[in-house]
Length: 469
Image (cartoon, rainbow, N blue to C red; front, side, top):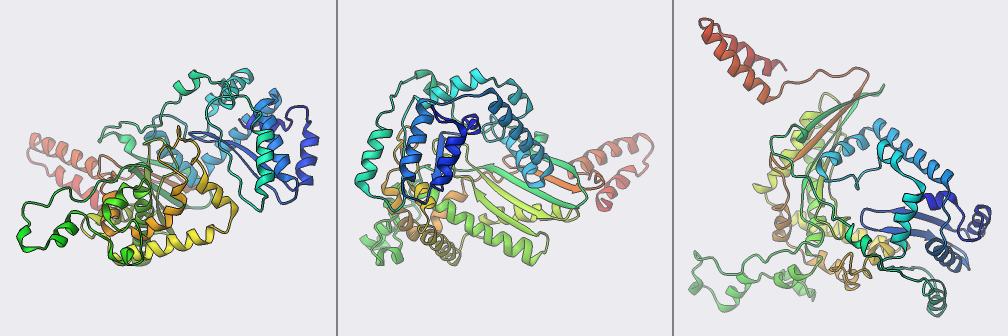
């Protein structure tokens, strides 16, 4: 897709004409492919900019120009991305995890083999099929005249002919996670990056709930150990369907748990708040209290609209000497939510942070377009409606401790579920450390050997390696 933008000319307009036109209207235009869809992003600051960009989009979709030299330049750009990834410690660590956790390479930049296999005709066929098939969503935010916008959309977008190609929809395979055995060595990887600056980075990742996953109600029935005769009818109803009393006092329509968890935003909002809480605990524990890291953060990859391949990410940066301890401490903090549950104070702080960020971002056009994205594509995001924009802050206000714990329980944090990757940069490659399993196996083999040799205490000597290492 980037070949079209790299060529620079569309329809009968030459590259120089497009450049002069975009400069005249202070217009920025970007064409990018995503995992699930293609998008064209633009921004302009002068009168006539909207008409210009709509005409460019119309020509891009109906009369794209394909140039072999532009394809080669794009290949070179991606080769530079690949080189940069191998030299960037954080990108390399994430790339290593992505290669073993996802079923295919859609979440990664193309490698050398994939780039070499691309031909101009093959690229053209695939992209033009996408241009002529499926829904087209157009989101416009800014100081505009509605009547003028309607006329422009009708003139430029309404004149695009759609040709349905069933092979395109059939080839859209959902992105999935790999089924990796619990004891597979790829779950724990270590890399060395030769560099004059000594530093280290570690990433822990695992499966999590999808963005639009349904959140179950806490109780469908009152537990058998509860003596219902000791409670009033209202209290029994509150047990079946708890209410956030603070949200209810503000007139929030999602204060009642059954209503809140029936909303499609329930998992997303609770997951975002959980990420804030986890990030706070990681920062105060791993960095402030233990002093093991420069920075550590926790994120949920909620960017996928119609796929279940959602993961969480724990990122830790430190020195080569402390990186293993920092990663282990970060994992302990995440697993500690089972014993030390999310507190109400943490929920309130996360709520305030997200609501404040939401209010600030509402002042930007880019954020509004992000909120509206996919509300008009039911084939891609059937759960996302235009009402979600208004309901988002209300859902943040209504979320409770139990909602966050419900999302936490769906994170794959066990030994057989988590993937870790540690990258150490330095001038010399660090010595390989003995793992606990390696020491145990060596000690067992030494015990057999010592018994065969008349009781020599080789096993004890092997076990001492753990203390020295």
